[in-house]
Every structure is written in C-alpha cells, then in structure tokens.
Length: 220
Image (cartoon, rainbow, N blue to C red; front, side):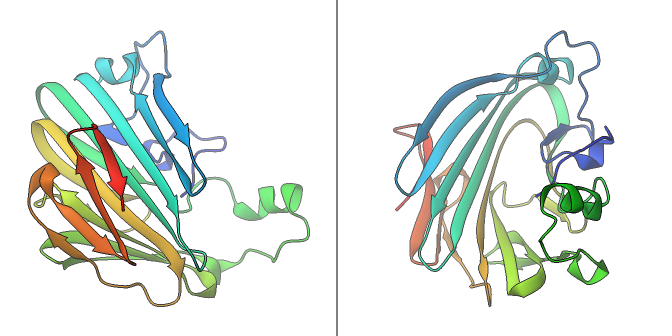
C-alpha cells in the first residue's frame, strides 16, 4: 500500500474516510494517539485512536486495530478493525492506496538506485468478488505477488476495486474488519463462519477473529 509523498489528494491516503473525506480542516491536532503497541516474535499489534481530526469529520470515536502476523514461506496476514461511533449516519470507507502518488521511478532512483526499473507492467491489478458470502478483493503485482482481502464485517459492505481500493458502509456506528493475506503464487480461498464481530476466517492454516473478551483481533 502506498501513501502520499507530496500531494494531499484524498485518494492518496491508506486510511479510514468519513463521507469520502480525509481532512484535518478545523483540527488543531492532526494525529491521534497510540493506545497500545505490542511486538512479538512473529508479528505485532497496534491500537490507534483517530484524534481530533476524526471528531471534526463527525466521529465521536474512531479507533483502528492493526494485526500483523508473519507466516512461513514469505507469507503474512494483516488485519485491520476500524471501530467508529458517529454523531449521525455517515458513509465510512476503508481505503487503500495501491500505488498512486509521486512517480515511483523518482524515489526509486534516489533511495534504491540498484533496484529493478519501474515500468507500466509493474502496475498492481485489483479485482473484487464474493467469497464465502463475504466481499473480497485481490491485488496482483509482479513476481506473482498478491494481497487478497476479505471483509468479515459488515457482510454487506461495498467494494470499489481499483486505485485506491475502497470498502464502504453506511451507518451511524460501524465496525469494519478486513483480513488480508500477502504472498506469492496462487491466492488461496478462505472459509468464513459466523456473523458480525463474531465471524471467523480461516486461511493458510490460520483462523482470524475478534476476541471480545480481550478486545483484540486474534490469529491462531
């Protein structure tokens, strides 16, 4: 996933949007607070509070959970949970910038001059489908690399495949739980069971879910 280099266009941010906006207009503090960060041998977990910027956009509370779990054979699981409580009905959008921003050849020349040249064939291809009764997306890059994602909740979320890739839902309060598997080769299918935050997803020998007792995403 990419991020903005020089521009401030909304489509450059890999972030939660509210009503299509990612803006700090009127906020004296742009950044939120890190509520927790735990690193282990196979990954890490972070919880970040959205801060005043999200309050200005209409969220009474906005918190993102991020789980990273490294697997054998160069694979990894990345899961995010956005928990948003609004002041009324809003459209909440999980957004991933998959390559926009400055010309990649510019920073490649500066920071990795020995790397392979970047060209049009390196563009990431994004598609969407339904799998195990859940919205899903597939990002495919060079060397058979992939990032496949599933929306555990809400099950009726809408996916816009492209750059940026967006997952949207309309509500006053929302929990958006997205699980991604990164790797090379053929992207495997997943099995989802249950509903809402009680849903579980099994893929690549791992089961991912939200454990209400500890208030975190778990990967076992």
